[in-house]
Length: 290
Image (cartoon, helix red, strand yellow):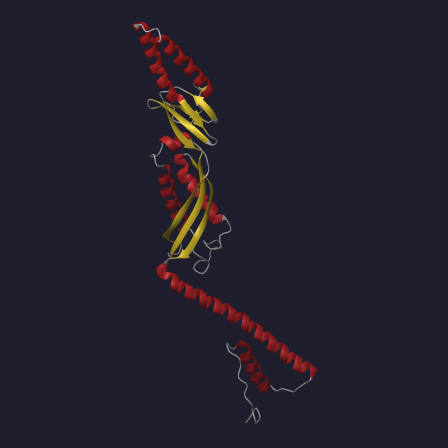
């Protein structure tokens, strides 16, 4: 018995030809029964019964659909051509579509490379490329098989990368994916679904977030990192402005400042430039040294 896909090469007539043959046989049966003798009735009934059975041989195949034919449990081939056909009425004709299908993998909780619990989901586009494997090598529920294997593949790939670069020195993370993670996910899915004759055309992560138990902590950390980064930029700009001010005063000879007065000026300017709130002016009625 064949254990791989192949095109059906048996008798396959046009469905319209089959209809014409059935009509002719039906007319012959009616004429035979119209003789009203026992032999004619017997012949007419003998022709009508095969006509009724032959109606089971008709099938319509739409674009990107196939019919997998079996004869009393034996695989006899797959019909790929679109159209209206008639085949052996004792063939079992199973529909297997070759059309692309979407699967939205609902977010699942997994641990990333460094152990952080994250919620990750994906979307994939897949289609059947081997009708024999899709129908006979796995259980009948093809969609459920794809769902289970996609969950397993997503868990494995998510465990290979850190959520972001804060927990790992790796250049590629789940958040900063430049296509490598998606390609790894697609390859893993194709490996797992090969047994079912399925080809994954595209796979992408469409949902990524920290799990609820650590989401608030990670949010505060991200906020702190953002504040620190902003402070660094502010301080860097303030120092540059103070340096420029001192150079300008010295170059233009506007005022002579000793080191202590320069330090006081730098301190005041940094306070004004780096403070979160507007600076409050203070009137000094004395001198710097009083």
